[in-house]
Structure formats: C-alpha cells, structure tokens
Image (tube, rainbow, N blue to C red; front, side):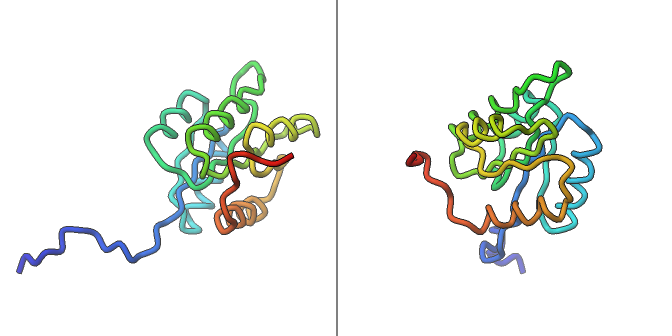
Length: 145
C-alpha cells in the first residue's frame, strides 16, 4: 500500500514565483492578492533588507519593485536591481515607481531592469508585462550597445 510515491510529480507546470518590493503596504497587498488569484506564488517586502533576504533564499521569475524604499526618498531600489541582476541574471525585473524620469529609466535599465512602469499602473497592465517577460527569452547578461 505504501508504493514508491514519496517524490512529487514533476510533470506539473511550476507556478511562477514573484517578489513585490514596495514600501507602501497597500501596493504589496493588492499585488499579492491579484497575482495569487491569477496562479502565482507571491512574496512581498517593504524594505531593501527584507527583499535581499528573500532573494537569497528563493528563486523568482519576476521581481516588481519600487525605486524609493526608505523614508528619506532615496533611490536605493537601483542597488537592489544591481544585486538581483548580478546574482540572478535570469530573474526579470520590473521597476514600478511614481518618481520615474527618463534619466531614472535609463539608469534602471543600465542596472538590469527589464521594464520600467510608472505608478499608478493598472494591475492588469502590470500582469501583461509580467507574463510577457516570463514568456520571452531571458536577456543576455552582456548587452550590446
């Protein structure tokens, strides 16, 4: 009766795993609810240190993150983009910020961001970008200029 079925079935598609990093609790909550309802495993972090710990212990297909993650309004999110790009080059990164300038977008993309969206962005639009990144081939770590 105990058969050799201790191993989980590997043929089932794995649910995509997302990390949402934003200092606004409402954004973390709404994105977590939306993406969980649409079949994703979602973790959230409200500050860089928390996000770094999650990134070290989990493998994410996509990270959606704000740029300003502290009370001083510094763009420390770029440091997180660099960290993810260096340690997990296959992970796709979406920057979602209310403070987006053309210069900031260029810098975020240089650091490794795949997409740059400006708040407020409808969740359905964010989901389209997430799905597009998951379905598209991973970027190369060395981009040609």
